[in-house]
Image: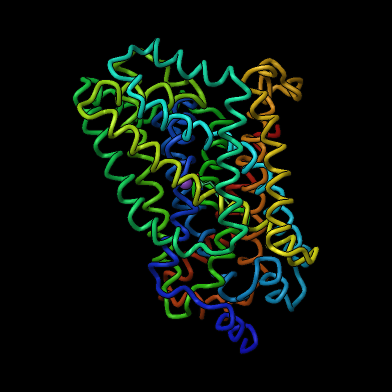
Length: 459
Ligand code: PFF
Ligand code: NA
């Protein structure tokens, strides 16, 4: 293990536990928490879905995050090389190749539509700052949103700007400034969410929202809802595409992997639940549909900002912070692709960023058109589960619910069945009881949970 340990030092370690937590939180907290969590919760009936989601975070998400960080730190290299270096014995030989491939493919596909939604957030900075939301009705706010969606050129302009911002940081390879920014901007985002929750409490529908989110009604839970909850746990924690593995390779040896993984997961979950508490009272107070889909936050939050005191200021600030959260996540989506191109194709960083960025940007155009000209085009509509899903919906569904859980399954199998137990005990340095709890989870419980959900949905 001496050779593996030596490699960390050369690559420069995170200065502290905080630096790792900031980078990992920057990746985790993003559109998944504020845009996606409320809308998938609304589409899947609320409480029971939230409960399953929380269980997935605790039983599958946190153990797999620990495994990713552990493999990364043990290997001390990029994910693909870390996995290869650790696999000196037989076993799942192709695992490392497959995890790398899933990471690169998922990164491409997710970033393509993530950037389009990032573009919506950019657009709403202007919408809010101009004061045009003040005192608007739900219908007027809905019309502003439909107006945005119906205009492919505007969507393309904002998508291009978001993609450009992500590429800029990845091409320059310097992220320390941005990571430090996270330590100010994330608490600020948290605070603004609290302010909106405070406003939401005055709508008279807060209790209804709390009941919707936290009173499980299992008659509303479907098998596909369970798959979406599992998939969203991976998506929101940035798991299954080796991002946390890459970050873990920079983590100093004396820092607890369990504590840092739990910290990141708790922050991520907290932001998502706050977003839910901010949005659903507004949904109920204005007679909107919880199942409105991907547009939910853009049809509800603007209403709140239009009605609350200093709403123009708070609203503008909120969307600026949302862009930052999406930006740091977008960077972590592009990074593995660029690293892979550098390693495997020998391209330099600027060229590989440009190449990968242009491919994502081009693919994003299909998502943009799904919102207007191709809104009725459901390429896989003949499959019952995918009925009515546009290209945009399919990309979202396939990445979060299939690719990421598959990547996570491989990570769990690698840690549970391939890596040496001694090495893992050293890396995690948990008490024997805690280690065994984690080990049983990663060896049996997490893989079986993922497999069962997959199989149920195929049948
Ligand atoms: N976790 C991010 C979010 O919740 O917005 C999205 C994401 C980033 C997913 C990075 C996967 C990833 F590798
Ligand atoms: Na997240």
